[in-house]
Image (cartoon, rainbow, N blue to C red):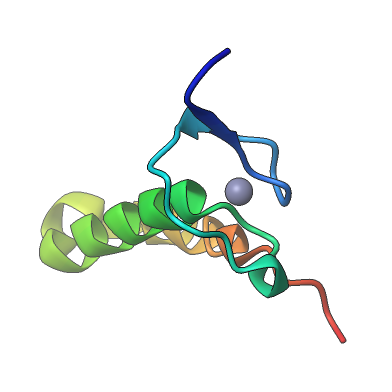
Length: 68
Ligand SMILES: [Zn+2]
């Protein structure tokens, strides 16, 4: 596959943006972008997200940082 990015933290394959990855985050910039979109949607639409807020919180793992 050409022009794709594979996230080292979760394995998500997403269209590559060409952005530089910060290896300390253990997540591709594309994966972090998706995470930001989900969080932004959640913050902008609390009445739609409602009780599913916990699902969005579960996506915080895209930070993919390892403890320590
Ligand atoms: Zn990821």
